[in-house]
Length: 315
Image 1 (cartoon, rainbow, N blue to C red):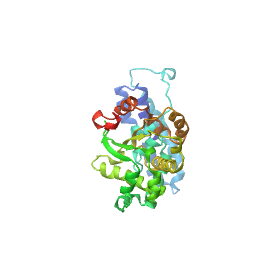
Image 2 (cartoon, rainbow, N blue to C red):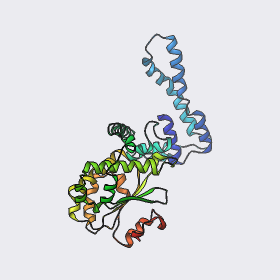
Image 3 (cartoon, rainbow, N blue to C red):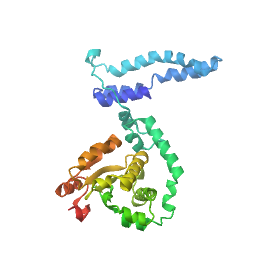
Image 4 (tube, one colour):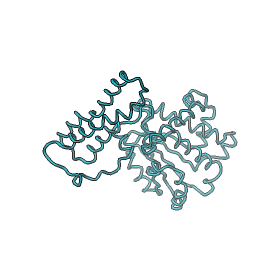
């Protein structure tokens, strides 16, 4: 695999391989593997030793074939290239190899992308999510009764409306208009709000997007309306709720956001964002736009959403 990856990298990133050399690549790229296979088959039958002890011998036997294949690959008979004339190769990142060769079969693509091509971290996070979903019974969350649904919707303004230009569902949340006293009067706790948020998220990806041909790649455009926000909203129940849901989305729903807009933001909100963003991964940070009230909010939303799909309250 490493040998083939090197050839793919050279071909795609140096743009110096001619069609003749490309034919050589197709014909000879597996040449060094032949002595490995033959030596294992023959020597294992002839010599009564552990098969692992034959590894150094097969490497030595494959070395001449490797050298020959490289000579064939880089010499198409038309030019003579010295080492000094060879282009400088930049280091290849795992994410580039991933894009060329595809993700591991047991890890969803969005985990690999979310981990910047770190396959080991992607596997770890995916395993963590599988365990979490099982422990919290997330796969069955939509089958469970939700007696506080209507009350929460009345006290906590949030809704899905329209789609982006890329087909993502647009989600609106007036996070600073949560009626905390009303929720407390209804005996609704932060745990109830977090559970409802997960219920709503699963509803979006499994019901609203049930016809999507690639449901695991489905994304949303999120619009956080912070009009009327005060410093008091950055503490207590609202902040606790936002911190917990943000952590859950980052840990267990990677690469589910096409874009995140914070609209109707006062000027001082940028200072708050400068502090908060250190707790958010780089991929998500790049998707966030802070938009001032009025025309700036409408123009920002129109980057991703057609004017006919934007709520009238935003222009």
